Image (tube, rainbow over the protein chains, first blue to last red):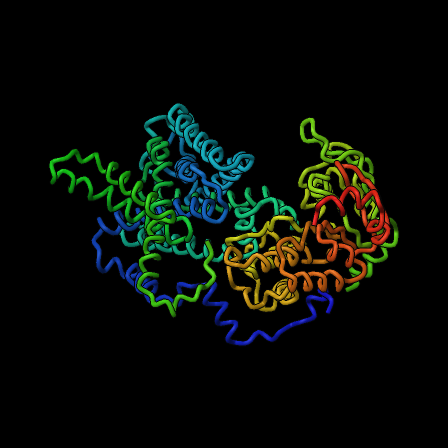
Length: 361
Length: 260
């Protein structure tokens, strides 16, 4: 049989094979815990009050979206980018600049449905250009160049008054009102963030098994071989930056709607590193990791203060807790909390059930 | 398969691979010096030589992994000297690596699928392939052809060495190759696996030419019609397999020199 007459052999895809392919493609649909989490998230407004809904869950989802963009780059592309929060912040600034805000001398006053796509497009462009610079480097140099972009943007926003309004930033940014709904009211905004987070999560999951995502993982594993298979590795890397930038920009738009203001503090170097910590603590091998990391981060940031004060310590030391947790995670589990969880689960599964399925990381 | 017919007509036009005065320097070290080789379309040739003779460097220059320092390389008449590797691959050139260069984090099927996708359109597609995707069928067929159907859902990192070597070959056969460079495909294979390898090589369609680097004479001389002998980065001798085998100079240099 000639190896090249490949398309002539067409085995009939049985229903069973289709089902197996579906399970492999969407492992969540087989997992009762995932359904339970989804259900709880949907009925959350019945359980939680406004504080929990916004300060904990919406904030978690927004940070999770931004960290998800880093997970996509780092987990599938092997590129650790520290500028994902900068891209999100840039999108937030653009919403404030093109839309309506309390700083009428700066904001152009476009309606939200015009300002938001503009912000997303510009932030994606920004991330793509930054990526085009970063792909010329590898490993620690990628981290350095993206950190440099983040730091440069932070100082630029501090010093530029014409567009970014210096260190005071832009305040009372308008949020969308339509169909008679104030989309920034607690419950409506929670559902908006939940919807966007779900779309981003499933988009990343889906793309990871599409040709683009597979090729990106190929570039991560062996870029030289990818070139010897007909792929242009750098073009794939830049496209990955563009895809991740769009996700980060979505998070940034939600963030500026959440706080209704944006200032250089939102794009500080510390905040850029927080995103890395969130992604690493949660785990960068799967899209769910960043959301778990964000939840841990937000819970610590919100409650560690009270706990610390109760023990007679300075409340601002919550970062110490996060730092210690980060150290522990990096030390014991290279793939974050999901890695710990998986190892724990594997230990509790009988060896008979342990037949290795294809895990993609 | 009209594309093959078209290619065959192009193939008749001239040499498949034509190297003229190719030199590759690594600092002051000349890994290749003034190498000139012409290979006909469909020709199967072995490149022999001791370690450090420049065989793998020759492959790297042809595929563009390391471009030559000087000289020109033509592939089916087209000057590809300045092309990046992926442009050469898209024109029908393929290679395998001496040390398996696979994607350990992906499954066997995904590895082969990437190889099929790399030489076709839709490399950036955001849509997952459906059940009736032509490339998925091409992938299945290729996986079966190299006897890996049983492990197609396993991650490559979990495969045995022999299976990785077979996958290495599968990646080079994806799409419609016109010319393949095999870099020691039999390295580390068992006698049975060697027989399978020979079977794969001899059953390739006649229009696909290849160059094979192989230390195992049993494999090398059984699957080729011509031999190029390299020594110290230069072409030392060219001829038919039995001429090379019986050449006293070659025996002195290589066959009798303690190798194999």
